[in-house]
Image (cartoon, rainbow, N blue to C red; front, top):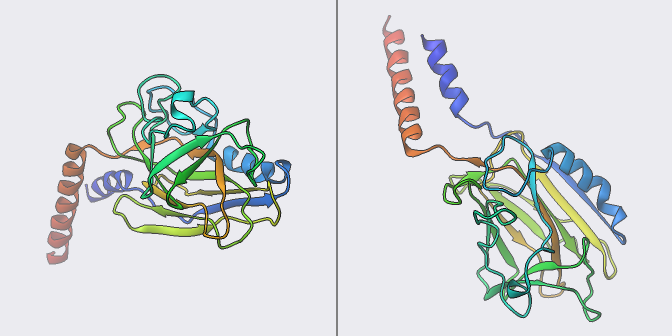
Length: 252
């Protein structure tokens, strides 16, 4: 009885395993493709961007399908990829403490070039972008993922860009620096994968006062919806029951 109850509780409790980091930087797109490919392989096959909750696999955003109405000079809506329509059903939102978000096409005056043609992403009025995950099926239920990665453009300084991961409780799961490569129109990749879904939010710092950059493709593990309140109540009751069983055993 005790073993059965404990097994059920452990099955409902996520394991926050240590992360595996995938990173690379270089002057050409090919310099980061091995790290990117390995990260994709670690997450699993790419899932269709439909309002469905898949088991395992990954989703991606490359910005190139964003319509003109949400591309520079227009602001990019942070909930654009948390819709129910196919293509937009990717269960992810973006926000910034700055003034807006921007999807644009690099021009000759930029120090960066796209990784996948032809649009890139950046926050405006701040160096910070916050990423949150939701169930692609209903676009409302908070979700967690087992990994997140992004391609950064023209990172010259190793202290410029970073990603900090947070769990459901809001506790930090670690800060990871994006690798740099001196020069213009360079490419950097950073991806971090956990053994189980643990990431509820990612805070990306993508630029600094002396190093202005942009971002391209985002890659992340398929979202796992968090338990419904009834499931949480069941878990709490199970934990309470286990405590009672342990106290009774101690008295015998």
